[in-house]
Amino acid sequence: MKVLLLLLLAGAPPEAYLYWIQPCAKETAEQSGCEAADRELAQWALEAWQEAGEGRFTMAKAAAENKARIRIYWAAGPAGMYGETRPILVEGKPGAEVYVLPNLSQLGPEIEAAGREDRLFRHAVVYLTSLHETGHALGLNHTAAFDDIMYFFGFGGDVLEYFSRYRRKLALRADIRNHPGLSPADQARLIGKYMR
Ligand SMILES: [Zn+2]
Image 1 (cartoon, helix red, strand yellow):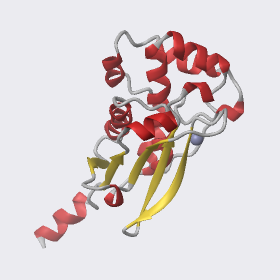
Image 2 (cartoon, protein in one colour):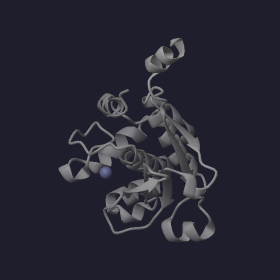
Image 3 (tube, rainbow, N blue to C red):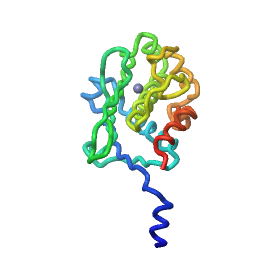
Image 4 (tube, rainbow, N blue to C red):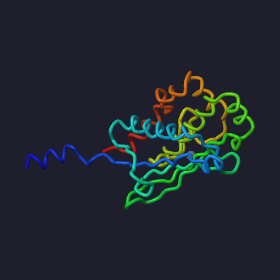
């Protein structure tokens, strides 16, 4: 009886996500413009969501691509597309294939120029794109608030400034880890989604 009560109080175990991030091998780099260290940016994005979830779900590396509920790929695509997330089922549980475009030349002349002049700007775009797309993988939808990482550029606004305001917080690439890039509203929606 005591055990049962404890179980009821504890609720369901937290949702567990295994993830896999495509290595930026030579051929992938040639196709997508990824850099070897971009994997770290994608991992930081997943860790930022995990931190924001305050224990409601866990993130861990999968042993293999086909075991992962969240799979991140480096992709190339048509101009103006930053990334894409496609839902998948992994062993009966919802997951996602996440495609991130790390080549800024596909994102319009303004963003391309900013990234060419400033490596940290480039890393900021790859990080924030990974964050946005993995937000979708966790079940979050777009918002119309410019402050949010789940903001949809289709609502308009200054896209260069969207990335630049984050870039200005960084002195070093490693600073990305200290600046999750999520708004309070993003976090509130995440927590609402994983309410137990
Ligand atoms: Zn989106």
